Image 1: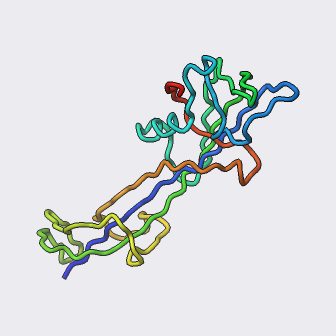
Image 2: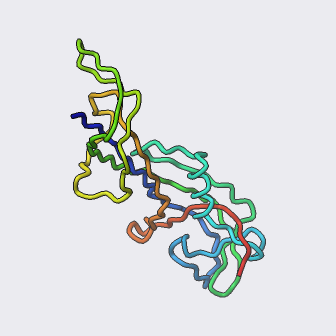
Image 3: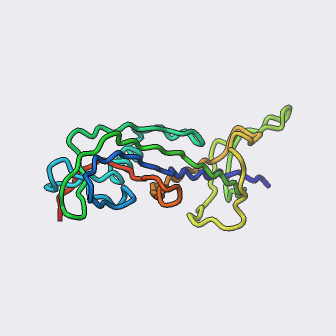
Length: 188
């Protein structure tokens, strides 16, 4: 009987947004950039940092290397934030920082049908056709966490990657501003 490893890697970006707002005495704005109303045309459209980050992430236009601090210096020409009194104030230094957290899990499956070539000198098995059957998308305790798929001694395994674009508001825990994407959408 042969068991075949299936490796499942989750990538989750933790994002923090810093922005400098040029306020006037008496102005009030939300503490978190995720709650701020940003626009580059006085509210006709809204700048959506979350959607911009998600688009860049999903289109693979930003680096996804795990456990490194990545920085995006966003273009903010004409971008303003709306105050509680509906005045618009300019912003500067819109900076998006993110760290990609990676979780790797492994589970061994017994194929229902397979064909391959076995090297009897090295005891390696090179699969040509493999039918593992359905792999459930729900992970249970049978999936064991590991540091990295690079630890595997074998060359052949099934590799699954899932990516979440869940945005964590790091400002609320750090006392700083956190936000993410720069896409405009119609104001409501």
